[in-house]
Amino acid sequence: MQPLIAGNWKMNGVASQLHEIEAVAASVKATLPSTEVLICLPATLITRAVQTAAGRIAIGGEDCSAEISGPFTGDFSSEMLKDAGACAVIVGHSDRRQHHGETDAVVAAKAKAARRAGLLAIICIGETNAQRLAGNALSICGDQIAGSVPKEMTASDAVIGYEPLWAIGSGQMPTSEQIIEMHAHIRACLTQCFGAEGQKVRILYGGSVKPSNAHSILALPQVDGVLVGGASLKSEDFLAICRAAPALNSPTVNSQKEQ
Ligand code: PEP
Image (cartoon, rainbow, N blue to C red; front, top):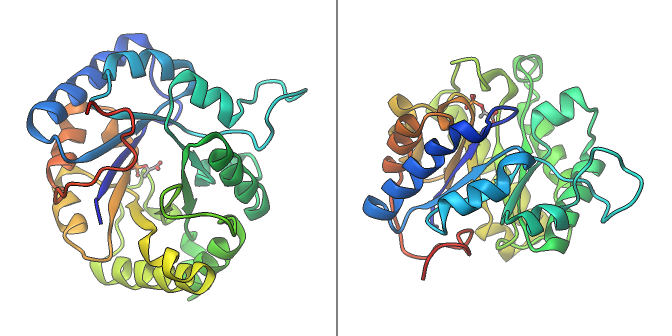
C-alpha cells in the first residue's frame, strides 16, 4: 500500500507560517515525488495553503459538520472544505471526541459527509491509558471501528488513524509489539465489517511520531502511514518523517498533485 504521511496542525497556524507549507511542498516535489503527503490545517488557512502548495502536496481540514448547510453557526460543511480546496478531512480526532463530546455515531455521520463531498476521511480511533491498563484497548478500538466507520466506506475514501490517547502529545509511545497487535486487530475488524475492501483501507499510526522514531514505526508492515501532530508544524521535522516512508508509485489522496 502507498504509505500516507499526514500532518495535523490542530489549532495552530496563521499566514506567517505558510512558509512551512512552502518548504514541505518544495522538498516533496524535488526529492519525494512519489510520497503521499497531506497536511490538515485549520479551515482559515486551507485556501492559502492550497495556493502555496500548488499541487505539490495535498491539503486537508481537521473536522467537518455532518450537515450540508443551515443554522449551525461556526461549523463548516465538508462541501465548504472541498470548496476551499481541501481533499481530505480528519474526523473523530480524540480532541473532538474529548472536548466536544463526539460519539461514534457523530463521527460516522461526519465520515459520511466527507464521502458525500468527495473528501478522504481520516477516521481517528484510540484508547485511553486507563482502558489500556484495564486490558480493554483492543475491544475499545474494535467498537470504535464498528461505530465510526460508515458501512458504505471504501478504501479510496477512508483511512483509519489509530491514535492511543496516552501517546498524543506526551512523548510516550506504544511498543512495536503493541502497534503491531492493534493494527492487526483493526485490520481484522475492517475485514469483518467490509470484506475485501477492508483489506485495502490504510491504517495510520499517530501519537508522538518524531523524526527519531518514524523509521521504526513506518518499517512495520502493519503500518500504512502516520498521522503527525506537533512534529508537523516544523517543515524540517515533518520532512524527516516523510523521508522515513517507503515510497511506492500510486498516490490516491494527492488528487491535487501535479500530473
Ligand atoms: C495528533 O494530535 O493527532 C497527534 C498525533 O499529535 P502528536 O503527534 O503531537 O502526538
